Image 1 (cartoon, rainbow, N blue to C red):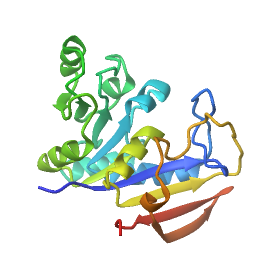
Image 2 (cartoon, rainbow, N blue to C red):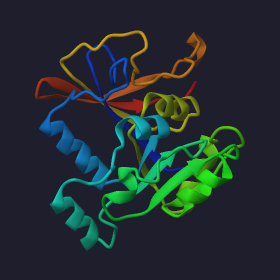
Image 3 (cartoon, helix red, strand yellow):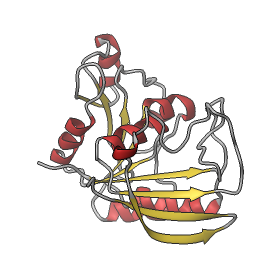
Length: 227
């Protein structure tokens, strides 16, 4: 069945951090990059985040531009892509903005370890996909999403989900906006956290685009197949 084409989009500081040691979101890029991100959202079938990002930032994951929402509607689509949360234990709050703001489908991907009562509460708000026993089985989840017609998937983090997707070989491209600030902190999240690779497992990238934007630089990378 395969999987969707998957790309990660993220903004990070010059030292590779995506938020502070308190895991609070920091404004790293400006209006031009936000508009670029909005265009990427509008051109995707679905947008996915991890539960850490959901709990820390409460994102709505909606397309902000009225013109882009209208274009989607005119093409016979919902005004927003499908919004997905990877949430092994069903901790997504039922009052989260993802359920309140904007039209469109929502999916919560849980594991078999998720408490039944939490899953049933979320089922009133979203489609539930169960993949994996103790943690979400990301390859299985991607296969199921592809079977639902999701062909282009945008991943907006956070660091743990980025690690899970990359380490499972599920990412095709990465967009990184590198801003003009230093955040620091050994516990501040980076673009990719997780347990890390040993040298022979390191993922290689091919730089396919660079663009100076406002006070930073946008880098576009192709994820190379493992040799």
